[in-house]
Amino acid sequence: MKYVLMFVETEEFASDLAAMDDAERGRAYARVLQWFADHQDKITHHGHLMPADTATTLRLDRGDPLITDGPFVEGKEVVSGYAEIDVADLDEALRVAKSWPACPLVEIRPLMS
Amino acid sequence: MTQASHDELARVVRDHAGQLAASLVHLVGDFAAAEDLVQDAIEAALTHWPAEGIPERPDAWLYTVAHRRGLDALRRESRYREKLKLVTWPTVPEPGDRLGLVFTCCHPALPRTGQVALTLRVVCGLTTAQIAKAFLIPESTVGQRITRAKRKISDAGIPYRIPGAEELGARLAEVMTVIYLLFNEGYLSSGGPQVHSRDLTDDAEFLAALLHNLMPAEPEVAGLLALIRLHRARAAARFDQDGEIIQLQDQDRSRWDHQVIADAGQLIARAAALKRPGPYQLQAAIIACHAEANRWEDTDWTQIVVLYDMLLYLAPSPVTRLHRAIALRYVTRPADALLEVDALADELDGYHLLHATRAELLRDLGHADQARAADERALTLTTNPAERSLLRQRLSWT
Image (cartoon, rainbow over all chains, first blue to last red; front, top):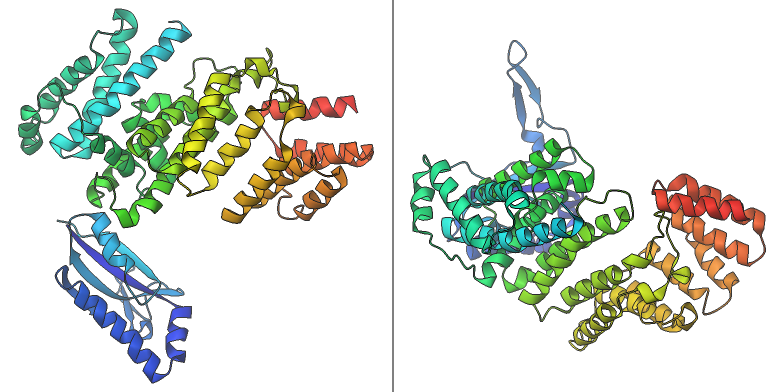
């Protein structure tokens, strides 16, 4: 079954990352790269999003399309990336997600087959 | 139908329906489809058996109905239909199948209410109507919880098997929480006038025993089973003829089931020998101290306080601290216990037992007015009829 792991950043996580020095940040990124390497046989594709302040939202259900800046929900938690994985079941998806070494929230959603 | 034959019917359905569900889920490979078939068979059994009597082979009877209806109902689902055709009698599930089913029903990706409803329906063979009646909620609500849970199992790919070693601890804790919750629900609602309502403590004991048989090396499971049995062994003495609560010190201990108490004590001892203590084992040990005392005066309060200290170390909680304070009263002076209780006053202000305990201690210390005020406060905080009646009685005496 295919699942998408959505990586969700919190304000606290973002400020912790910003406060790191280059060496620390380098090690944090290395852990993420290692995670992708460890699970490469299960990951079908993945992406890292630019920060939420680069988002533009288009509203289509209220007459003329309405363009606003920012993500569609203004919140302290934003999706910052995703990985699509192909595994046997939810338990295996949970095992993969549990070892994620970066942002503190991961939403797991099955892909419609 | 008499209460005895009612209980017998419930027991037979539970013993066989869960087994059949485990086999069919395993053999057909679709949780929702298999579960629907078993539920159909249970409904048919509850219609026929009360009038015709329980058949000699209830399992074969349930299998035949489920199989026949399945071939009919799964007409369009050819892949399940073909698999079901190959299923032959007797369908004996591997012990692992049944255990896997419990873990599926209590999967942490399901909401707690869904876990409870699904476990009762799939593992214990209750109908939706029986679950609704036991929890005093509308049948449609239970139906919806079950439908949603089953849909999530299939859509989100929740597997039906025993979790791997690294997840087992957390997943087992989840299952035990569901069983404990069922037990509490049944325990607190007992004693009322609803004679024919399902005794959930019986289902909780059944589940704990099933889990213990399949996982004998898990001491916390043994602890949970002992805990449930120790409570049930004393259930007959908890209420008087009018359904009023009889407090522990006033209970007729000859009405306790001393054989069950002795067996539970051995169960606790065997679990303790595995040297992996946990909250269920400690709670069971505390209740054993009460259950094994021949008279109220013989209660080993020092031991009880020690056990509460261990429990607080493993699982700190203000409610446990309150119970420790209640025991402490019999080891030291009431004034010391009152200090402890007052220290919890902010945290547990909304909990009736805090105020009821304060009332008892204040009364012992000769502060009758303050005691009355605390009892009155407790009365505003509980809706349980038996507890309310006890508090009212106390207020009328003093």
